[in-house]
Structure formats: structure tokens, C-alpha cells
Length: 292
Image 1 (cartoon, rainbow, N blue to C red):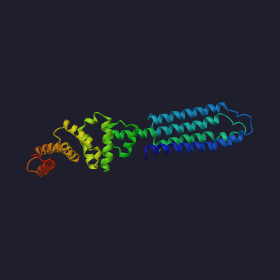
Image 2 (spheres, rainbow, N blue to C red):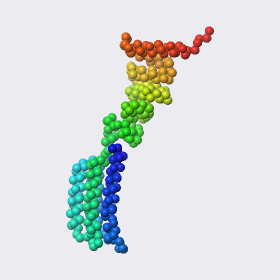
Image 3 (cartoon, rainbow, N blue to C red):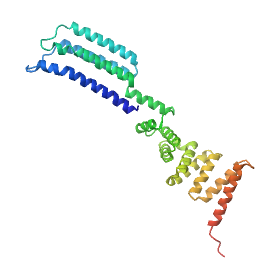
Image 4 (spheres, one colour):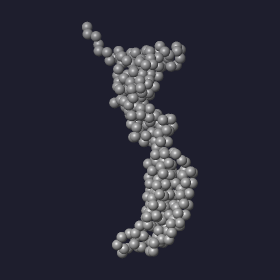
């Protein structure tokens, strides 16, 4: 269940309990007082109800802030219910005409309080749930949907954008990953200088065949290579981006560097040498003939 659904469940139950309390308490009181010129207030009972409300708010606030656990909250609410019943009986007989209605007030109040504690125990506070999801994002454990919700509230968290990019790559959503990498790089100069992120961005752009991202990705990958010049991964990605953008000069330079770094007499070395020969042939074919 998502944070929004938890919150909706909590507030729906609270609203239902409040409506039920109103339906139980208000009609008898209205009938008992109908036709009278003014409502007579019992000051002692009003003070008691206000004190109970204040105690309920304190317990709920302590639960939300983490000052007490759900078990302790339920115990406090049970004690509050007991005292409410005892003090109501001790307050004396009800005024004529309103006794049966008022006798329900502590019971209804106890039900509302107990229901609140039960809902918190089952689904938790929405604020605490949100905090828990944020912690999972920071620890890199959150699924893509939770990361996306977190980024709606924290769009400048570059590392969360990188995490979202990883989650989208895992789901084969490479176009979504390209956009997430772009947002991460734009959000943080530190991330914009992270070679791993820059190489991943280039690889995602190639895999997604996002032609509109090739030039930017090539620039970013070259920046990553300036920071980590001996990266075979970075050299290969930059060579592929150079080929994709028909930057033959850069592609040849990168392929030649890969050949130099690859051990001789290996299938990888022979593959890169063949690619370099192929590129040289293409460059020669596209070179304009010399004038005589």
C-alpha cells in the first residue's frame, strides 16, 4: 500500500468514526432540546470533555512524533476511557430530558479514541510512512515507484535520480533512464563529475537509441574519460557514440586507444582491430578525391 493510500485509509476511517459519533450523539440531543429557547450547558461536563479531548490530542501527537509506540498509545487510551466513564458517573445525575443522550458521550468518545489508535497501529502515521520510504531511497532499497514519489517532493536529490535511472534500466526502460540521468547530472555538479554516472548515461542513450541525446552523452562520456582516461568501458562507449554521430576522427582515436589497451592475440583485440580497419575503409571511401 502506498503512502497516499495509507493516508486515505486513515483519514477515511477517522471520518467514518466521526460521522458515526455524530449520528449517535446529535439526534438525541437535538430531540431533547427541541423547542427550548437556549441550550443549557453543564460546565463540569464540558470541562471534562475538553480535558479528554486535550489528552487525546496529546496521545496522538506523541504517537505521530515517535515519542510513544502504538502499544503504549493503546494503553493510555484504555486508561483514558476508564477515567472518562468513572468521572462521568461521578459528575452526578443528568439534567432532565438529556440524560440518555449524554450517557452515550463517553462511550462514543472512547470508541473514537480506540479506533484512532487501532488505525495507527495497523497502517501507521502517513508522516512516518513517508519518512520510512525516504530512508529506503537514501539507502538505495526503494523500488522505482517509491523513488519517483520521493523525487516529486525532492527534485534536486541527484543521487535519487541516479537510483531511479538504475531502476528503469532494470525494467528495460532505457529512455526513462536517459531522462533520469540527465536530471541527475543537472541537479548536482558532483554527480556531473562522476565517471561511472557519465558512462552509464552514454550506455543508456545508445541502448535506447535516443539520437537526440547522442551529442550530449558523447560530451559527458568524454568528460568521464578526462577524469578516468584508462577506462576501457568509457573508451568503448565514446567510440560507439562517435560512430553514431559520424564523428569519424574521434571514433578512430578511441578505437586505436582500445586496441592499445587490449592484450594481443585475444578475440577482443582481433575484434577491435577489425573494427578499426573497417572504419579506416569507410573514412577512405568518404574522403573526396584529390584534384590533379
